[in-house]
Amino acid sequence: MTKEAFIVGVRGRVDNAEGMEYLDTDMEDFCGDMRRLVEWLNHSESAPVVFAEPGFRQDLFTVPQPFIELYLATEGGLHLHVGPEGDAGVAADLRQGEMAIANAHFGNRGGEISGSYRYGCISLALPREAAFATWSQRPYLVKRRVPDLDRIRNLYVDVANLYHGPAHPYRELLLRSTLLMLCAHAGDPGAGQSPSTGLQNIHVRRAVEIMQEKRSDSKLTLTGIARYAQVSPSHLVRLFQSNLNTSPMRYLTQVRVRHAQGLLLRSQLTIKEIAHLAGFSDQLYFSRVFRSETGSAPRDFRRQAA
Image (cartoon, rainbow, N blue to C red):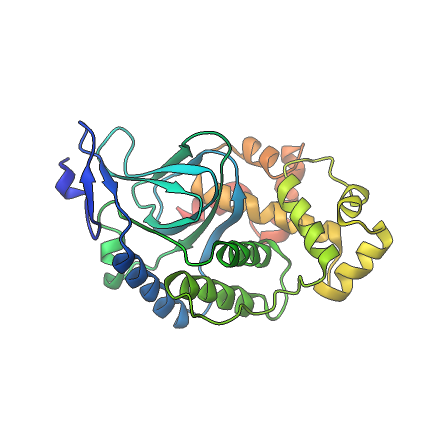
């Protein structure tokens, strides 16, 4: 396949013998795409989030899926490649403070450039409509430096917390509103303030942070979470109930199940591997909890989404 068959909506240069396109930052394309996302989300009945992680420290691998993915380098640097493995595609090095929009229709891969790195990733399921043709026909990637890294990073955290958090009457509205705010502010520094996510209390926020960071640890306990949050276990339970209308361990279960859902959609990992990464030491127990939370078994969930 030729290089020209893959390049769309980007401005860059060919830097290697394999025909890989390396991007220069293109603010006009990036901001135009963010406006398209805002318009789409404004008319969506629900937030199309299928994966949300604000601080990954592991290599990126997304199997081909009809997703648009938003990447944010928060520490170090991430080399991002969009396109089939072993073929020409589009690539970019995301340095700290840079954000990228990429499709996942042909698969995405990424790894650290050097030293320690951390990045956020939000995956959105695209409807199969002609309006999104330029995001589905060939590998696509644009990037820019964000106007306010701290603010964008906090919005990634808010989206992830809402996505992984418990269901409540306003969850979808808040998730969609926060995602809209992220897209609007990434494309326009003058965008307004983000909506409330119910995590204003510093102890609740610290508890949720350690849940996200340690969710793969099947031995994570209420006592350990409370110690990180700097309150007693009983006080943390009261704080979660008053702020989020749920318990800390119930919240942790939903964080783990949401993470597992994202892995089922975006990877080719086995159910056993996903169970381990989601913090379940026993695959059968993981399957029971997953079915209880989602209404379907992990294999059925993956099959139905294919």
